[in-house]
Image: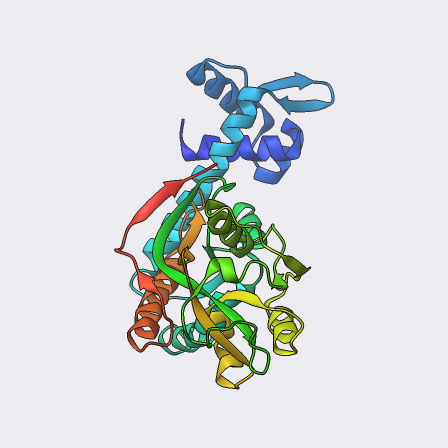
Length: 319
């Protein structure tokens, strides 16, 4: 079995007939038929069911098609990487980021990529982590940040850091007896009117997990799956929220929000840099990933992104 046979098989499967595949590949139909027969003999299975209407893949054929596409794609990426290894990186990379991460990282990353990789087009897509997971799965994006991976398919992930979540209120509407800035137990927060994302959002699930571990129940008065609107509601005094410091630093800097760290327990969440394990990584995406790590290290070192970094390491994980 070689790459040519796999490419022929992909064309036959996609066209649904030997004659159509023959025209697409400009290869004689009897030759294509012989390639299929040789594959079946080599693998010891029937790959296609033939009829007067064309060909239909068997279950074994579907398995071979999936792997054949991955192998051919890997071969194309290999060729591209070798050709470009000695030249200036050129191409595009789509990067999915949750809102709180995008707020602190997307602009300095875009500026750095533009400076160091002038021929690379970086597309940053800001969305909820649930959407980012789906886009990684269907390969709409190359890279993404996720906070959890409970229902993920197989990915390659690098756990970069942990960030703590804080309690936020309007600057003129602090609801607690203890002053802002002083650590506050989670038990003093859960009964307040909270504005949080819905349960499809990773941050909401994280907060609920920590609360349930203490036997606490959240009083969520408004569900809002948009970071800007959550901060707007809280700034107007229409509730309180729990966010990462990076997500609220703009409103804090303008004096619209004030906060306290949460204790008993301290609520933390991991941040993973993720790509689909079966998606071949291009030379350009590797360069963007390398620069991303450098920018993150710089933001943390300068105190702009207040997180606890993890040792470099990769994990494979799945559902």
